[in-house]
Image (cartoon, rainbow, N blue to C red; front, top):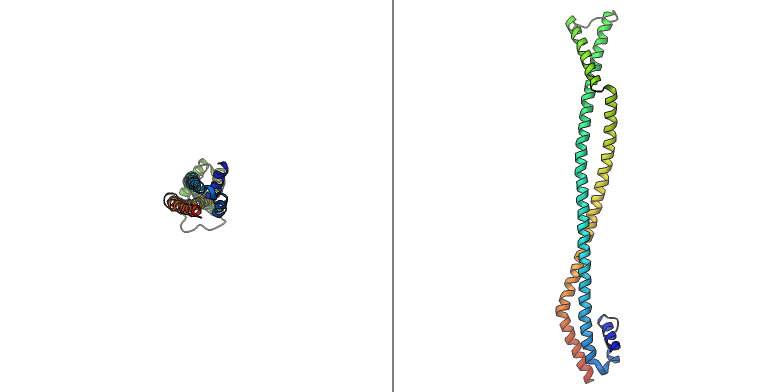
Length: 229
């Protein structure tokens, strides 16, 4: 019995030809065909189970990839937040640089006033006593404000911080975009594979439910033919 069942299984799975099986089991052909039909049904069922399992694994894989994609999108938003921080540093640098520029401009005015006092140059037409007093006060006020804001040291620290943070943020953005692209490609490939499996399943299902019935009738007809023969 075991040999018949084994050969029926081999024939059902295409590992033994029908002609070879008929020659070997001619005296028990009806019994063999019944067994082979059962094995065919089981074989198709197992194939559908295998496809189902693959589809489930793919669905989980796609879910994991989607989570990874969302994580990278979060990183992208974090980059936007980081850029706001960098913009704030840039704003501070601009303000401090503008203040430094104003200090330098007033210092030039004071230098001009000093040169006029020393007789090194002639006084410009716009220079009056009041303007020299205002220039001196403005220069002192701006210099004090600049130093209170941190002066050259603070400006250097901000510039260095800006450069480092921008370089890091740019690198992170490139890395994030690259991984998002890779993940999207992986998701696309998984979905293509998923569709292929679905097509395979759609072919197997009607075969198991419909074409298999026709195959059984065909096998029974061959059995009858064999018995008559």
